[in-house]
Length: 458
Image (cartoon, rainbow, N blue to C red; front, side):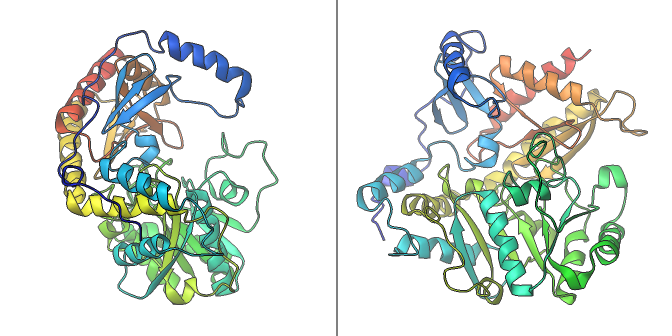
């Protein structure tokens, strides 16, 4: 394996190259960003949209710096990718060293140790105390596709089940697995078949216990799909794009028990919720759930493209030799970065940082919820927290979604140098997905901006 050559300073507490503070020096977007936006409109597909048209020149820790010199507090982390912080020292050093040694050979032709080491770390840290194996790929959607493919090969069955409000990607199969068509699937059909959408656990709106919600899901699977035809059930332990829905206690283990009894492979899509984001390595651990397969991506390599399917060895070995792989899957540079991510999580106790972030966020959000009845619910785990916004006065009755408030808050915060993200099937969820490098001071600063934004709603 490449010697990552990390010096003592790199291995110590993070040293930030950008001051960890927000600073606005121009209009948003600034003149240089506006110029780049004009260039972009001529050459980049309109289908590739951006939430905020500011062009980023540097990023470090929890701060984004645009080409005009504005500094934004990043509560999105590339939608959960830069989980351990932008340009984290250990990751940068590991990737730079690997670039000097081997950039690409293709693991399925001439392998290398970095791929093997990532698979060893995944076997160690994913839920479940059994023999595990992995395949490394490029993206979350590719991990989903391979997870389904492996489950079908193992079971000899065709059908795939997912849950309401799910999001799994933008490829042909994963578009069919998503709950929401617009913008991910509209006009892109025909979509893949044999995909079924079962009711999920959404405690804020359905009021069901974990056992009752699981019984409802199972009834759908048995009556509409049929257990004997079902290859896999793919579940996000905390739904991401759907609005950070946290299932009721007991829901996931009950589904796993049913899947095991019926020979169905249960797959945890931990693409957004994994890699220390929730205060555990994988969010499944919060619920006592040990899935058959676990999908990792986003935060696994500190910003470089890498994803994985990890699971029970007998399931992972169902594929014939040559059936899994891909040209860039498990690239040596991305693998070196992933190893550094695992090392950084351990060295800096980033699981504890996730818990710290949750405590700080919850305390501030609870104070805001006591003052603004537009906040219907606070939910999430670790550095994966959200508030669902409802029409004023409806929180305990109809809980009518308030997407307009989310849109207004995101726009208001951007002008103040804070990047928030929207989510939810109805667009009425404000999600906070910061890196684990975000300080309490930055969280509290962001909450003050959120307070001002809520007040501006009138």
